[in-house]
Length: 544
Picture (cartoon, rainbow, N blue to C red):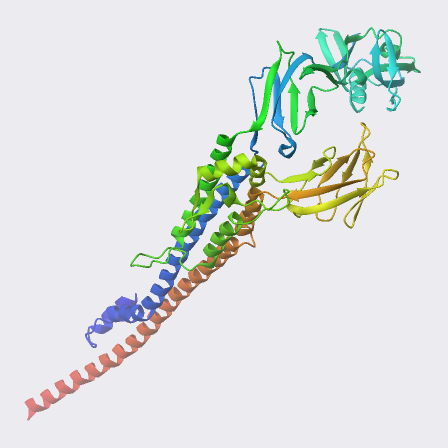
């Protein structure tokens, strides 16, 4: 429409291409400003993309660190059949070779109360008292240290409901089994171990439903279909019995799982594996170098005629590199002896900042003390008294260092620095202490009842330190997180600037069009007057 007006006016006006002139004037003012904003947005998009690649590398590194966490130089080997073995506390493991033969598995007592018409058959009201102990030769000996459980059976209780009530008792499970059409059984299972057998005494009070006395085993235990028994094995020639098939107190730092009776003795070897440890460390170094290369490529300065990277001079990229360098060069304390460093295992920094691993140096350090290698991958809380059991809990809240634990056996009250701890007795006579504050917040200790003092050391592994650094860099308040948000804000602001420039261009076009229209109207009037005067003069000349 604007062009139509100018075109119609232009037939008797200046003769100039005012539409093109308007576009050129608007473009001359707007284009340079738009170009600046668009170039800045392109650079911002490149920076966001580069930060995204770095974040992705850090995420992959975080996943790799999760897989590496807890690895140990100590390994378990041997042709084991029906016998599982796992490291539960590498810091306590000693190199050794053990002969193990499983002669009997632990099992829980199973009672079967049969002959019910349905799972919803009612049983008479009354009381069931369940004692825990051991059956031997038809005689039950109750465990005086464990109180009996009492179950009140209300009127209208079904067989299924009774099973649920029995299942609420610690150490027991119960279920209703359909044997065949119209034939149901209530099955009760106890915990593994000969001392976890049960005896049920029934006291019926109701008049309707199945007689509660059917669940009484005080006379002959005839309802037993499987007896409670301990696991038995020959360990290095010694006859050993345990209440559970999962055994954690035969080999320091190792948990055994008995799955079946052995055909004969089996050999379990416990010791360091240099080749496996080197492969793990090599993979760790390669992962670090991959992340570092991604950051370095994005942050290249473009010297010697090269193009600069999308994050050249960017402080977030520098912070990410610095985080890697700081952690990989840190000294790890709390593992006993001098601090552990990555360099002592043959890891050196090249001139370009990448890491290299020397096998000869690694082998010498590993042979000298393989347990120091564990400081790279496993956090450790250890006590000078080897009878003390420890658990790490929330390692992120704990502070590496050495601490003194003191205890009064008479009261059970203990001190860990300025923190007072109250113990909780365990079934085996030992005492558990949960640490809820202080530098070892989240840790737990299990001690013998007569313990008075022990020294504790806590060390955070290189993997844990690096995981914390990764989270710090990529988190909402980390260097990458903050920079990403700043760049996104910049993109939003520049997008708004482009919108404002479009609005400005439309305003300028309207303004120039208005002015040129007025100008053309004036010129058209002048031209019209000139034509009139010329015609008038010409007429006068003809008359004269």
